[in-house]
Length: 283
View 1 (cartoon, one colour):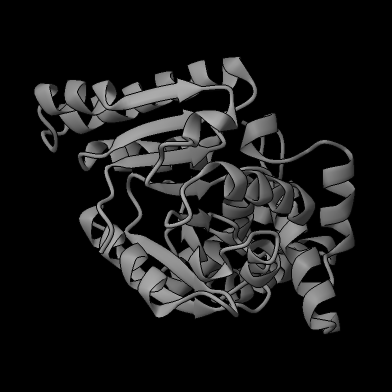
View 2: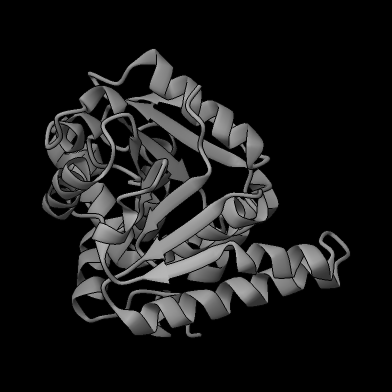
């Protein structure tokens, strides 16, 4: 097992700052990278507030919170990860952008460093092929919100080595997470099952089968889901849902994954859910 102390996290959005937080909380030195400096400021503020809630609930001491924040550094250059021992990418869900980034990481990090992606649907094999170390490229799909959700979907690409998978699983355990392995097919396990449900809920709304409240209520009260599919779609981001459904539809070629026209229309209108203030519900 390689000695892993310094973690590089790329992308200071919702997922990236959550991933950075759990690593810092677990004793790792973390460097969070984003090309947009204000995003890093927002991420540090979000992480500080999140850690503060753990202190308020008695799940973390004030000293541990301060220590975790002390282990967190930020930077705007990917080159700052040259000394990283392990990297997690959490940028936009776009295959070309991820391949370009991984080629860059491959050039600047040590040859033994494992490079991972938090992608929720894009092929790990395709991402790994952009590097000279595809055996050390794998998926680590954290669930949102990262500090609270215990699952990490760990995805093995065509060339990913068993040793790399073992290191990732061991790291998940150190984070207090449960790693469950998925094969490298579009959407992996989580989104291959979740997104068709969300898509069907949107179809049901579009076709007038029920109101948004009724659709969400049936799944909450009848299926014991913690939140309804339309509320969940707003939480994830309707643009993200659409991107994943497009990956499923293109990658598997099955019409059952065709994104609902209403979803496409809402994304085109900029109604993306919580982050835009308007989705199936207003925020």
